[in-house]
Every structure is written in structure tokens, then in C-alpha cells.
Length: 279
Ligand SMILES: C[S@@+](CC[C@H](N)C(=O)[O-])C[C@H]1O[C@@H](n2cnc3c(N)ncnc32)[C@H](O)[C@@H]1O
Image (tube, rainbow, N blue to C red):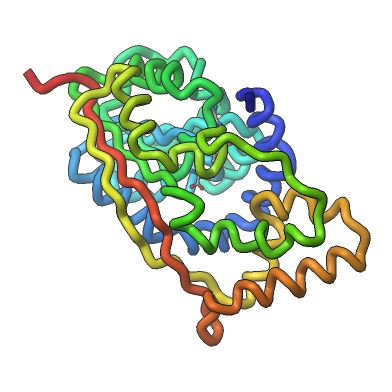
């Protein structure tokens, strides 16, 4: 089983460095997800928001700017590397702050947030039921949960393309359980429903959302050589194998390239729940 310690090592190491280095590309790419989430959160008229697995803080800071003067946003993340970058971008933003901690076990001040949100930061817990139970202790009685997570790999071919095209050049990867912590840890909507029910959340709604994401074509190679599974192994290979993989993967991405732009559909879940029943 992947432990939170393994996730901490990953996100403080190679994955965290890639997200920091490619922050601008990723924040542009995921802007439609941020926009959707901010609409959802702002509709709740929040005063204290927690951004779970906030990474380098794009959604945290975008929301704090939207709420300016009318609410505080706290980002929590297990990666010191990513929180350091978030703090750098926060500058003198008095309405945003960051905590470097494991959201599954962190001793939150009870009942301190009226909205808990996340842009792709909740699929990595070793024990999701205990994580969402812990997060519920941080929620006020009327608090709302608003999350974006990936649907299945089959519905997100852009996200699996690099790994698939590189596979013939690499040793076979060990099989992973479909629900293992990771990008697709919340792919099964029924499982997400059960996790939230078992951790005490109510009025759960899990809605499939398809969003068009784009990035300039000039960033594509950088993207697939740094991100995901391929980004984690490429540097360990000899130069000739590296080049063969880059050529094969770039060719495989051709269907997503339209002139100087890369476009694909992100198949996501928009997850809503309440901390308590509205009685
Ligand atoms: C895919 S990244 C998303 C980051 C950010 N939400 C964004 O959209 O840019 C997932 C994030 O979850 C964080 N994470 C993973 N496990 C965590 C845990 N147990 N507690 C807090 N953060 C965690 C990682 O460090 C990483 O920053």
C-alpha cells in the first residue's frame, strides 16, 4: 500500500520539483478547473476556506484575490517544496496562508472552515476515510465540500498517453490497484461516494464534468518529460533510450496538437457534500 510517507517523499522530491518548475504551465493548463471551483466556492459565500493539497497555491491565491477583504483562504499541503513556492507567490497577501502538514492527520482547529475545497489534491491519502473524517473535524456544522478530481484513465487518454507510448522502451511497470493513491485514486465515483459517506459527509453529489484544457505546443515536450510516471524515470535512462522515448511520445500526442496549441478534454468529477444535515 502507498503510505502518506511515500507520498510525502514523492511530493517533496521529484514530483514536487516538477510542479514547482512547471508551475506557470500547469496553472495555465488547469485554469478552467480553478475557474469552476472558484464559482462553486464563491456561491457558498465563504469566510474561511481550506484548500486541501494546495500544492504551489494557485487556487488558494486566486480565491483569496476573489474574496479580498471578505474571507481568508488557508492552503494545506504535505510538500515543503511546494508550500515554499506558494508562500513566495503569496507575497503580502494577508488573506491567504499556508500550512505544511499531512491533511489526513493534521490537528486542525475544530470547526474552523466553512468551505473545504481542492483542485486535484485529495486522491493521494493512504486512508481516505480517516482523512475525510479528519477534514470534517475542521469543518463548521454548515460547511460545504467542493472538490475537483480526475475520472478514469480510460476517459483521460491525454493523461495516460506518455506512459503508454513509452512502455515499449521501459521494463514492465508493476500493476497498480485501480483505487491506489495517485492521480486516479478517485476515478471510481461509487467509491468516492462510499468514502464520503463513511467519513460522515452528507448530501453527496458527484457530477461528471468535461473541461477543455489547453497549453502552448512549445511546452508539450517539457510537460511530458517532467510530469507523471514518465517524468519520474526518464532521467535514469541512457541518452539514446531517452531520445527514442521522446520521439515516440511526441508522435503519440499528435492527435492533441492543433497548430501551436495542445487541446484535450479533462474528464473530471465535481464533488459536493455538506458537513452536516441541514436540519
Ligand atoms: C496533483 S497535486 C495538486 C496540487 C494543487 N492542488 C494544484 O492543483 O496545483 C497534488 C497535491 O496533493 C498534495 N498531497 C498529497 N498527499 C497529501 C496529504 N496527505 N496531505 C496534504 N497534501 C497532500 C501533494 O503534495 C500535491 O501538492
